[in-house]
Length: 123
Image (cartoon, rainbow, N blue to C red; front, side, top):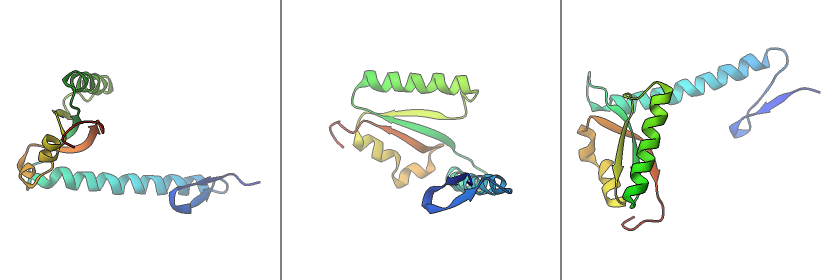
């Protein structure tokens, strides 16, 4: 029996006869494609100006926002990237949406991940 790995979209690769090498090449190509999309997003600040990736924490509870932001800071410090990712907070959906507006394109940071409390006012 052949060992096979199923990938998203029904694509698969056999682990026999060099199939693992093909699988790893496909995964690497996908990672490279997604990485270049993130690079384009971060380079959107203009020629020669790269924006800092940012995690946006949105919660109506100031205590929850502070706890999540502190946990993210600690996790980044443990991973060796404490100053490479910015962490910002927003108190409601209106404030969070303002971070994604057209005026935000001139900001120094670019939101790449949003941690969102779905049960809050002003969503």
